[in-house]
Image 1 (cartoon, rainbow, N blue to C red):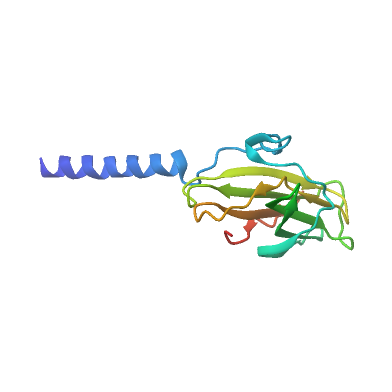
Image 2 (cartoon, one colour; image 1 turned 135 degrees about the vertical axis):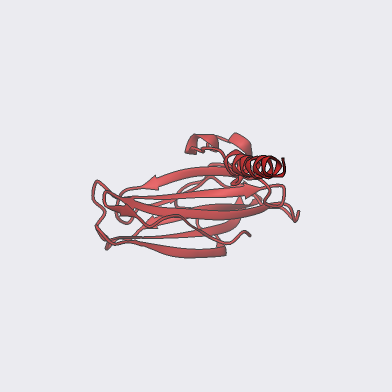
Length: 168
């Protein structure tokens, strides 16, 4: 009887752990650019040329084969008189951006201290020297609101994987 209880307990624990991993470990479901453009979910469309103050970090991604480089960052600034944050990615001009290479950027916004978040994007660039931004989201003095920007470069022979700034 003791062995049956042990087997049942281990099986139940594995089932609960597995369900937790599948049901919400990331706090995000599949997201698309259309989820946050045109004012959706509190985001504001901004021009790709808009530059702000760098916050929360930035980085560069290098894809080896074919060679392609992109830089990404989280920025804040004034949009229509409001303080907002957004993500930006730029494809390197000296890189080999051919028809099979794509750089993606997206921004995650949490309003509940990183328990769950809204993903805005991904937005993609496929041309050397091109820059693209995510829509912007209002900043807040609330400790529960935070932003991060994530990016990746993908090609026909692999990916850089996903890299994110720290939460800000």
